[in-house]
Amino acid sequence: MRFPRLAAALAATALLAAAVLCGAVPSAAGPAVSLADCTYKPGVELTGSPWPDARLGYRKVWSITQGKGVRVAVIDSGVNRSLPALEGVTYSDPANVLIPKDKLLNDCANHGTGVTAIIAGQSAGTPFSGVAPQATIIPIKMTDSDDNKNGAASVAAAIRAAVAVHAQVANLSVVTQAADPELRKAVEYAQAHNLILVCAGGNFGQQNNPPTYPAAWSGQYDNIIAVSATDQQDAFAPFSESGPYIDVAAPGSNVIVPYTGGGYGKQDGTSFAAPYVTGTVALMLAANRGLSPAEVRSRLEATADPPPAAVPDTKYGYGIVNPYLAVTAVQAAAPPSPSTAQAAPLPPLPVRHSSSRHLQHLALAIAAGLLGLTIVVAVAAVVARTSSSRRRPVSRVG
Image (cartoon, rainbow, N blue to C red):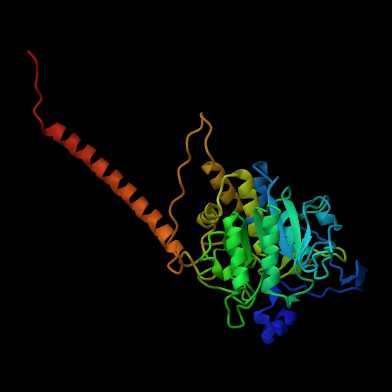
């Protein structure tokens, strides 16, 4: 078992109301390093590019956009900004809903720090970089540890704080097993303000796979994108949760993140899968500022690398996120200039029967079917006319 603290938290009755970070901080060899009233362990030197970088190929998008100007809220355990991998990040409007008057965002769990690095980190002289290095990060601290006893209330407050500072997308690498009414209201508030919530699917896949929130509400709210985790072979990570609400998957096993104690280390969890999707959403929004949350999710799903079985799949959703296809699809869908032809729409997605999205996808499929039928009828008519003209006698003058 790789997540001892999470396992202990799950065994506790209080977990239903607690908010749990969806990634554990593994121990690393070496002496502890004290910094900002927290104790950290060092990592190791980064000698090569992290595997998700090559797998997702997000650097190919940077000639189009690096996410500049998109406001990304990181609802988590804070962020240690002094790390080399985070020194170049643009920050705005940090908040601490755990202790509202305390503006210190020290990340004792080194969790929000890793999440932020995956979204927008950049480190000169090393092969590490986040997905959208020019995005603006809004750190919103709502916990000091893996297990936050304030639970759903803290998550709800953090979502509202993200709306207040005009975030466009928020990363929630945190889950609760409580379908809390206040949390639901916060999700609805975010939807009313066009805030996209990218939510970790949870790490209890091997422990009865309970539904986790806000991710499990993906079928009910267009602004939620629920994310599961995969490994270097594109296999579904065994700890990752599955269910009909999963939208897309992303790398979440042996993910490389910077450590506050120095160097880099490997992390497991849907916590570290979600920010790859959040970074991709930032790139999409930068490429097409007019996208609604529903359009962002639909394009993410339509451009994902399909799962090995049926689409959608309870483990992978619509597949592994593909930043290049997602960005180029929305860029093509942007309003054309007078000299540019309108891009063709993407094909309809397979129907997900478990949610209200069934009607949306069914409508797309019916529309596509009617369009195809119209084309067939038109072609048949042309053929019929041609055939008839060949049989008709030819009149000659003179």
